Length: 312
Picture 1 (cartoon, rainbow, N blue to C red):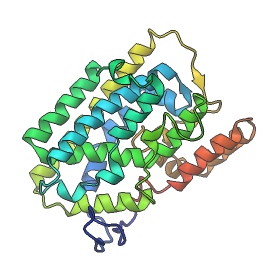
Picture 2 (cartoon, rainbow, N blue to C red):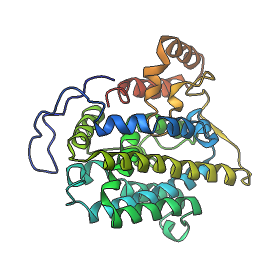
Picture 3 (cartoon, rainbow, N blue to C red):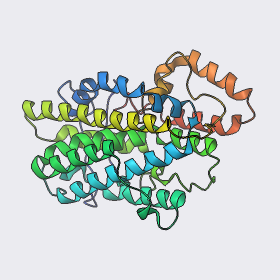
Picture 4 (tube, one colour):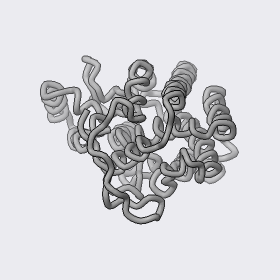
């Protein structure tokens, strides 16, 4: 794992420049504990069929829309609890609403897919409701655990969002101007790498005892499990939908378990762990395909996020 430096120019919730953080990680740092403690469940999440199909560019539009609905309810709940606890000493340093909050972007995506009366056409699924209920529970009863949910979702979205955006845009023939995919666009963040370094440095500076850190790791595992339940639910729904699979044309990762399939949270890790052989295989496939330019752009986005996971 590479050294981590806090971004010196980012402002803390409008409070001015952020001071330089420590430049090496400790095994006791919260970000390291979370990465290690969620490794196993992370690998399970990446192997759900829904995620594997998405990352191969094989997308059912109806399932994509239902996935966006689940995300809308999840982020609405999380951001309600973040607002409720924005002054809590264990969450205040991680309060970045302008940079991170997603529920308004998701609302615009749903309006694009379902029309101006979209709110009357969508509902929270059973799996998403369990996730939502847990978020509200921790926000009201044990706010420190919100750190786990925010970390799991936001850092993953920043790590691989642009890759997923390109795949979805191509497969569903969505407008190049971004309609329907605003969830993946973080206009308030100029450098995802620097922002993630800042966020993780803030996490590592939280004053927490060992027991609380363990509870945070356990909660992050639960967050992954809730996401897997949503993926499994979408896969079951997909069995009942008579719809052509929308295919981006070229798999985004290879059959060797290419590391872009490191789930929608950390998909940019694929470029780092795939190595030269993987990159060459992908480049050859792309160059042979008429949609190569778009997928080249997706791969370039992955390379731009090459250090996303290992620079945590």
